[in-house]
Structure formats: structure tokens, C-alpha cells
Image (cartoon, rainbow, N blue to C red; front, side):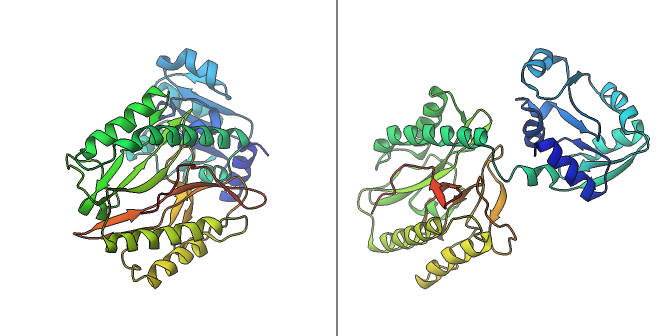
Length: 348
């Protein structure tokens, strides 16, 4: 079943006759258009159309799998008014602004219905082409990390490590997927401690979390490494997180409940007295967005299927002391799983 067929089936279940898609990743998923922030998609029972403006005339014609209409608002809404007349039109409640909603209501003789997650549900399982794009992005990130790893040592600023990672990704033809996290020593207690001017100290652990974006698709990986010889307590924390990470990765397979994977890692850290130090969920899906479904967290109802790509990233964060996170990117396969991140997990 194609994505459009899947979306039309989801629309029927949601009780809508047409769908106005405005979330950038969802626009790209349906069309292949690489500037989706400046595009919208209308899907009806009879057809589907990409709307964008004249800056993208050539690009849209070359890239889009759907016929493009080149127009700016309000012409966009006027063009779409006829196909949606007297229909129930779903819109993405998480992406359409209040101003955008008012524009649609002013131009369309239609009933507007908020929806959530219709396109996102279709994106949970990746196509072989999407898997290859994610695999290529991760291979590139692994290579860049290997080139930069020798400079992660005492006396070097976190910012300089981040800059080298960013330059490496750019030189290799990728985009920087998100703000690079380089958190050393006590700053390791911040799960999202983006690189600062702090100088790495001798014997400190350094957490590095970064990813490439290639052909629109993301990679995501975290490694915690030692600058010198860390103290006994941080070695204990590191090995506990590593144990939890490896156990959770080994449990990734079709049919596994996302909530159970989170519980598995959390129970291991609790046995090491680090349950309260694990301050976030175990992981998330990766694709056109760096964070998407499925969610590996307590309370999640997601069940893993072949073709899903997820992160497994337990961590332990001790305020004023430091922290550890280890993250792999994992593909769910028919027979189990494949770890896409190849960078070794160092023993400290």
C-alpha cells in the first residue's frame, strides 16, 4: 500500500473526506519535495496536490511525486476551495497555526476537523530507501566521530570539539542534524548540555551526542568517553549505563513493546542505585525528524515492527558530579535488529 493509499484509509477512519497537510516532515514524506517548510499538500479521494510558491517552480517539478501548483496565499486557498467544497477536511492540529486556520475558514466552504498523527503513523515503518538514507547518514557520522575522537582530551574546549564535528559533517556533504552536545565533567549531568566554552579536565567523562542529516534523513548517536582516567564512581556509573544500554539493544526485535524496553533498562539502573538518575525515556524513532515515533518510554503503546528505526539511549545524571549517556541507532529487522551505529563503546 502506498503512503497516499494508507493516508486515505486513515482519513476514512478519522471521518474526514480530505486532508490539508502542513507539517514539513509530513509534506516531504508524501511528496519528496526537499523544501517542505514552504509547501502544503491537499489530499482528496480523487487526487493529491503539492502547493508551493514561485521560488520553487523548478525544484517542485523536479522533486515532487505529486503535481505541484505554484501559488501564494490567498491564491493557494482559492485554488483548493473547489475540491474541498462541502467536504469534511482534516487539518494537522499540531502544525496549523491559528492564523492559518482562519485563512482556511475564510476561503473554504468546508467543515474543518482537527486530526493528530495520521501521516506520522504511516512514517513509523521506513521504506528500504528511507532505511538506506538513515544508514548512510549514520555511516557518515561514525566516520566523522572517528576523525574527531583523538582531540577529545584534557585542555580542549567543548566548543572546539563540537566545531570539528560540525565541520566534518559539512565537508562530508551532510547537514548538522541538531545542536551538538558536548558535556564534560559536571556538565555531563545535563542531558542536553550543548557545547560550551568549558575546557575539558583531566580524568573527566565527556558525553558527545550528535547526528548527520543526509537527503533529509537523520542519524543519532551518543558516546561518553574518558579524557584520562576517571574516578571510581564515574566508572561505576558508566558501566551501569553500558549494561543497561546493551541489554536494551539486545531486546529490540519485532513484537517487542516499547514500554517494556524502557522498563528493562530502567530496572538495571535501579539495581545499581541509579533509577532516579535516569531522567528521560529510553529512546525514540528517527527519520525525517530527529525525534518521531515510536516512543520507547513508560506508558507507550507502541509495538516494534520490521522497518522501524529507533534509538536506545539510557543515561544517568548526577548533579554537580557528572553524567553518562550511551546511544545506539537500531533498525528493527524481520529476524531481530541491526545496530546501525558502528562507533565502538569504549570501556573506561
